Length: 135
Image (cartoon, rainbow, N blue to C red; front, side, top):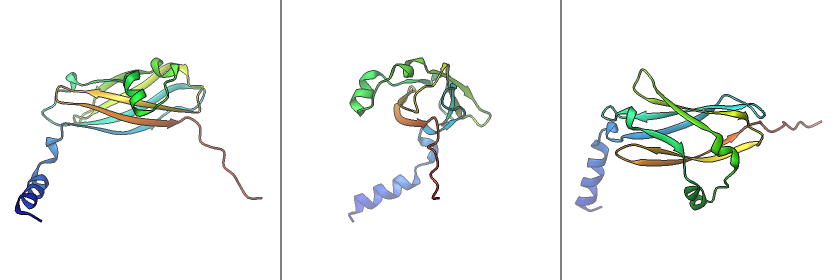
């Protein structure tokens, strides 16, 4: 390994974790099929990031097409709201005024901050598959 490559590896390892401005966590589903959508996603925000500047939306239909994701009408009915938690992280709540009729939702989230734009795909299984038992 060259000296330059070793130096870059060492510098990368020394970078503080806080230099990463924003991170999208996993989604937690709180509702079921035939209920209004209720889910949440934790965003990790660095200390120097102003949470008021962070905007969360469903990605554009163009981004869906680029990723090869199907667009269903229900996705446009999802409301996104954010709140700042005591530790400085941001919590996104996904909700709907209509019941989810699809067995799963596959969508792409767009998170915009002054420093970056992040996209992440999520799939929500609205109803667990029926268990199969041997008889």
